[in-house]
Length: 247
Ligand code: DC
Image (cartoon, rainbow, N blue to C red; front, side, top):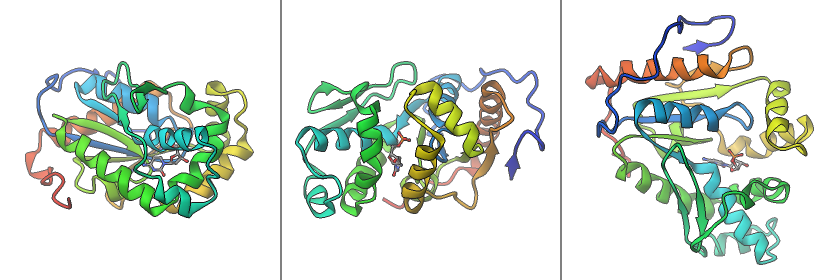
């Protein structure tokens, strides 16, 4: 299933309320896609609308990268990075209204968004020991939540393959570079393309994901579409797979 500006579905008049808040639904919404496709804002708004928690898995890779850079570690040295993967205590807040990231108790929510971290994070995220360590933690957070929207690159394929709803959010690379620039003035289309390339091996579109091309859609439309799909799945219990059975 693919939803785009050309094949736009009927989202008019879609209210963002209606699924019981904090319903303990066990609903897991996986949102994957490349950088700048609008995953974070979309995921947070979907989580708020549905009364679910929110998990930014990219923030965890960024947090580890920040910690390594603080220690002067050469992040291109995969063996050293692998050995330090479990070094810091990384915590993330899952309230979609106020997400935060902490490393060893210190708030690094802003520090992990710098150009330095963004330029180094792909090299860290590619290391298998890093992925194994952070994915285990992500699965625990998802399993402990009453319901959650988790965003990243491999949520629907690896972290939560039994998610109730999988969304693969895309946008063309010019639109993504424009969005990234709105967030961080130093971000260029070349940098977005380079990161896509470096992140490609860790990124996947699940076969059963709904692909949404947000290029010609505004945020409200994208959010309303995902909320509607999540409600449909929530109302159809037989579509919900047992969660985390792969753990
Ligand atoms: O979404 P983001 O830009 O904050 O992600 C930061 C980096 O982490 C990015 O280079 C891709 C990587 N990442 C990953 O490999 N797997 C995830 N589930 C989330 C992010």
